[in-house]
Length: 59
Image (tube, rainbow, N blue to C red; front, side, top):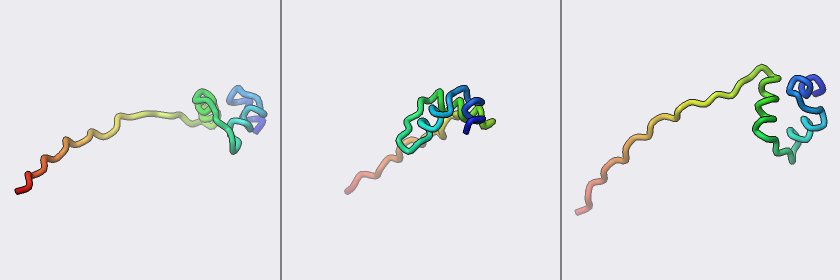
């Protein structure tokens, strides 16, 4: 944890707090931890939604 905290640029105590059961890390903290692990977060466009089907009118 010490090495991970140093690589992420945060204190060991802050890392434990962020990742603990009651932790609520900031987005920047999550990204820093991911970078320290050699990971990156990417986003892509979601699949296009199909237009709604027209329903036949009930007789």
